[in-house]
Image 1 (cartoon, rainbow, N blue to C red):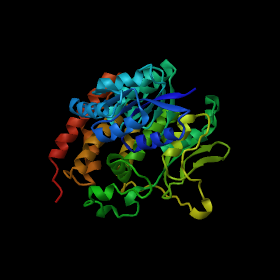
Image 2 (cartoon, one colour):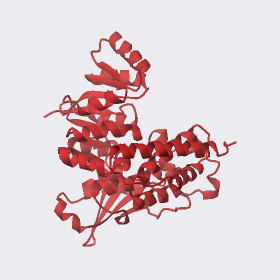
Image 3 (cartoon, rainbow, N blue to C red):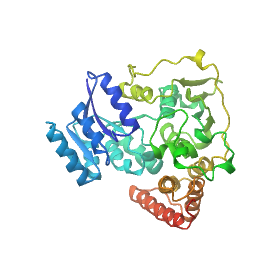
Image 4 (cartoon, helix red, strand yellow):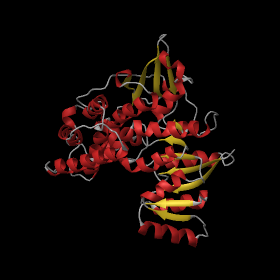
Length: 393
């Protein structure tokens, strides 16, 4: 049966890779809805190629521009806009599978709506779990939704994990690998004057600017530790991070008998996307086969928390529980945006997040309303802290 997809965040790097895989298998996959925020021109190109029933954008002006261009091209795609429109296409009967690739907290509401509607969810938006954790997992369990991880690390763990929950006792720990980003070998004292362009030059992966900065600070890996906790129901002390600069081993699972299973592949997001889209089958992703003889050497090292304080902050937030991880994510989003706009320096990202976590009272994440209140409070606190920091020269 052909899968009908709603692709949340179609104009980003995950969206591009997903549509590349979809185009290779038109008999297997079709597109019900594509969504973007303000990248209307690219969305129009995608709509004309994949002919979705619905396109969703962030605001009325962008919607008008997209609709005009689609009508001029003879397209019948219906154009809508706003947060509620994202929710509607995520729970619509028109799709059975939702690819959640919106970056940041903006992806929470539509992804949660898909979970409550019992959809198959291909999750690239780690913030949905970082922010709402048990609330999101409970929605998946209550509705019978199917949750498949799309991040390369979590998809790798999923591929190495036992298929039956009863066998989970045999798992001793998860090992998430990290490239170390562009500053793996830089002295921490030299990172103060890092520019946004330098932070976005990832050595192995092609990603958007926000997630590239998160990779440079290793906050991305910290968020992935929190996500892994919820996805695989393991405590933080059984989730390790190991720096692996070649990005060939995407993650590992260690077992009680001494076995360690690893998933390997070239660093290309089309591999985990193809795996999740076709699961439990395997299909061509367009990614070249791995040549280990050519790579020759695989190396590993422990992360340096002085160089990567954001990773330590994320682990502390997971240990604290409650809404700490919500506050962590919100403060980081505000701080990264400020860094990209050259309002604060690179090391001030961690400084801002740390200050927010210390300033706000932690509460039990008892409802979505509590989570959203914590998110808003953390953003306000982050803005106040940033306003007090010196602007980089």
